[in-house]
Amino acid sequence: MRFLLVKTSSMGDVIHNLPVATDLARTHPGCRIDWVVEEGFAAIPRLHPAVSRVIPVALRRWRRQPLAPTTWSELSRLRAILREESYDIVIDTQGLLKSALIARMARGRRCGFHRGSAREPLAAALYDERHPVERALHAVERNRRLAARCAGYVLAGPADYGIRAPAQVLPWRPAARYVVLLHATSRDDKLWPEERWVELGKRLADQGATSVLPWGGPVERQRAQRLAATIPGAVAAPPLALEELAAVLAEAWGVVGVDTGLTHLAAALGRPVVGLYCATDPGRTGVYGGSRAVNLGSIGHPPSVAEVLDALGALLD
Image (cartoon, rainbow, N blue to C red; front, side, top):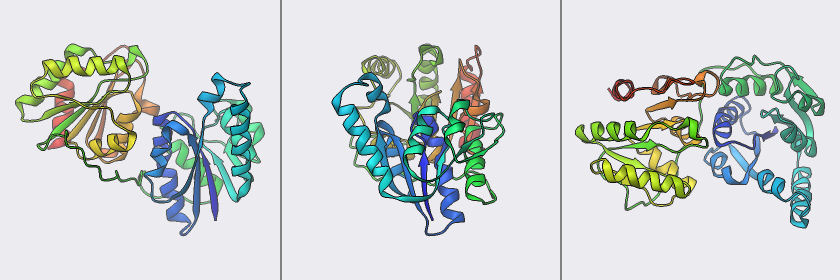
């Protein structure tokens, strides 16, 4: 069988969809799985051995230049690519109008959430087949249940992200055990206070662990450098591609991260992860890694350093 998955963004949402590829490969041996994803996150489904083809889109870039000739040219090219294959089932687990429109471009039975389950109810009108899925479930399980109902199989066992990080030569990476501190996120209200990162890093140093601080943009880089200058032995990472970040996370002794896609990636790679929540509820979109992941905090109640150390210690025992 041939499946097309439509899950374009954000990074955490894309990671939460990885178990769908694992489930499809298990229940339909030898199937072909293609995946439409935002160009900036294309490296994530490429980590999954069951995904045959990754089809990048540039919805974010196209939105900024809707009338540009390049936008229309790339949209036309996307439609042509999606029409090259005849899919048995097209599964849109995003449930947005934009993702439903992409699914509509493809040839095959288009399936998605029922209007009462979709994030944007209008999206349901564009599917050939619609399925209700409980909204209170974690995003991983919502994706898995929708795909199972679309493709006609029964879910068995816990979620399996199914990915492995590619080998990378990273001379700067600490040789001894290290903990990755994911301090950066998309919204300021999701940030954990810097003084708590410093205290956490110092306590980890007392235990013989090096703190590694990745970053993205200039503001995050400055924060990483400030923290590294204060935490004994800490390393502010150099600029890293997503594949390199995956390799760093995969070899970490543990990971502590705020509500950001990389924290979910660490969980998908099977690392011990403590997720820190300061402005969002982790119930539906928190770190989802079974016994190897713990979510702390909630809206307006950031976790304390002691809580983080206790949770991380329990995971590492």
